[in-house]
Length: 46
Image 1 (cartoon, one colour):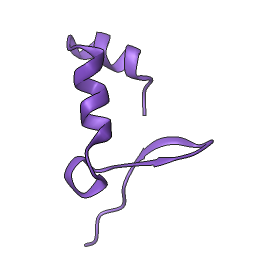
Image 2: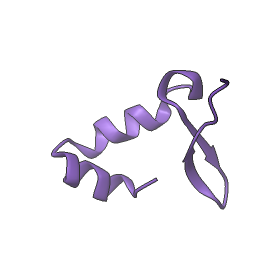
Image 3: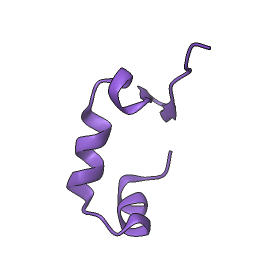
Image 4: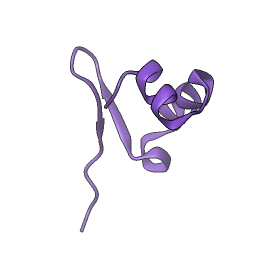
């Protein structure tokens, strides 16, 4: 995923809004953070 600052600027929203979205549990925001690997989209069951 994009860096929080870049994502906020490209979407025209605050960095806090992006940080709040990243802080939601993975099932709610679709993101999974991995230490040393960054933040990625979580796999969705089919």
